[in-house]
Amino acid sequence: MRPEDILVPTPSGVCCKPGGFFIDPTRPVDKAIITHGHSDHARAGHGAVLATQETLDLMRLRYGEKFAGATQAVRYGETVKLGGASATFHPAGHVLGSAQIAVECEGLRIVASGDYKEVADPTCAPFELVPCDVFITEATFGLPVFRHGDPDGEIAKLLHSVALFPERAHLIGAYSLGKAQRVLALIRKAGYDRPIYLHGALESITRYYQSRGVALGELRGVQGASKAELAGAIALCPPSALNELWSRRFPDPVTAFASGWMRVRARARQRGVELPLVISDHADWDGLTATIAATGASEIWVTHGQEDALVHWSVTHGLRARPLDIVGYGDEDETDGVTEGVNSGETP
Ligand SMILES: [Zn+2]
Ligand SMILES: [Zn+2]
Image (cartoon, rainbow, N blue to C red):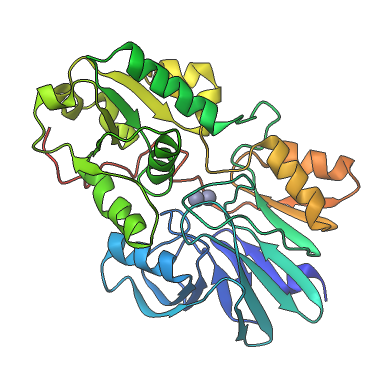
């Protein structure tokens, strides 16, 4: 059997013919395995959804009770038999509940990793390396220019600025699923113990993280806080809110943005970000290439935009490699926030 007989790349996601399911399909299908809750991977309207409990809960929070016809929660390490194939879930280290899916059929193992990062994150289970024959990797930051560095160093920059400007608020743009909670956890890890303020659009997912045992300290809604209370405070909001009327309630705010794209200075300037924080929930170039090599896979399939450099790297390292032209991935958490802040429920 060829890998393409097990997983067929289609423009709307990879389809497992022998198992009768799709992984992260971008259009409604009968049976879907969902790797994680970001909106470009997890869509509403499938007949049945298999995912981790956290991913199912996050989909329910976003789309309501009727987001799928039926659901099945699968634990990390658990294998599900589906037709002539099996699927095993492994942690992807990307956001709470994120999973890589190892599909096996007739002795061939293909790992669809979804989005992943191999570095530590206090808000989710650590990435697990799964040896395989074919590895499907994202390439959100698939260019050598992307080296994220140490997130603790970025938080130290933030706290230095807070100490330097005690009368100003620090307003951090961070995506609502994963990034916001990781930034909160990193700030706490650095020893900052004052209340941190949240934009309304970040509250429900952040409360969900807390309900799953992720310690984030004392959090308060921005809604209802006085301007005096917000002086010297740290607040988080969806990136789109940084330049909205909403941000005017803050006294002379220092605007920050936590994203892997902040490595590119022009991006920060373009958004009017004073304090770029290079913090990403995706593997950087070194992480992608090291992970590809470590899986031992002889064939690499690449998704998510910057496919060319990673395909080239793989080929020069003796691997077969191809881009998957799946339409509609472009991460919610690292694109320009078009899906964020829309239903914030807050007035300016
Ligand atoms: Zn993602
Ligand atoms: Zn993605």
